[in-house]
Length: 457
Image (cartoon, rainbow, N blue to C red; front, top):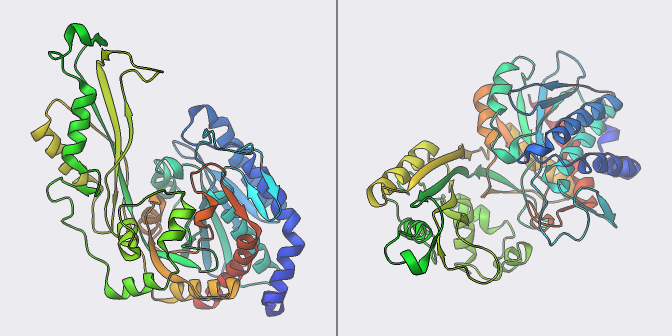
């Protein structure tokens, strides 16, 4: 191993030398609209997967598509020696839709503005994926005694429905000593943070039909049932809107409060309510106390209403009683909670209080509790300190990555996190972006992580 190539100065020079190449490769991926939720984008999904395979081949690695019943997985490899340990980096290349009117640039044509890269997928998750990729190139140039593999998914944004199947079918090819995930968000710039836990997700829809078609309210109003009003009542019976408290019996039964050690770690994470509101363009919050906000986002389950469908939504008012209505909802679950148990509690409550309402379970993702001690955690802390000059804090993350618990179960190895995105980068938001500061620091961090793991495993 040539340690001279792994100094801060050497890796800074590597990043600057390869910046035009990094930006070109990122543009190639971002310009492919790999929106997994849109059936009309299935060809773009395939093109993105093929572009990822080509990326590895161009840079001296090997790669293949692992077919599933859904979108393929990409397995890329930089193998050094069969006798060396293997670390696998997980990212996803599918993206959210980009139909918000607030976009100021073409979301599927990456634009560079100084040190900022604008476009859908730049930070979630194509930019971090390429950052780890270039970190691996630096490690390979330094002859780090480690096999570095990449597992890139194309269904993460729709709940990874084919991911477990793909892993189980290719278990031998995916054999690894550890997995590192780069799909998480820091609390604030300059203060690295990495999650020790992820919330899970339980999605569902409520529907109610009371007539064959919309009816004149002057003719039937007062006698006809209004499905919109009844579904809104059902939601109010389940959820206290102003406080966010869920009123389903036993909903919080398995929730374990964060420990004192966790809360102290959160306190030094750099979190502020003001910055949180600014980063997410929030006008008001349910509480302005920092610890309570962190607890609500990271360590408490939620119930949210995402959309109400039914009736007339054009200009003015059309005085009709709708025939049918739908409410789209989900719960975020904390470690200790179970998707099916939660959905069954909601289903039982509705059957008792609103028996005509039909309950439709959607996709679910298990919550995840990671480790903050041990060799992998120490390698992550050292990598952040090396790449960004300050050790990381272990917090939690309010989002969900269904692939994480699946990888631990199927591959039988520990999963850790080395995320690079910032709240201001706009995950799932209009004008999503990534920046060179995070990319350059991330390349150094990943190179150092690979070097540390080569002597740890």
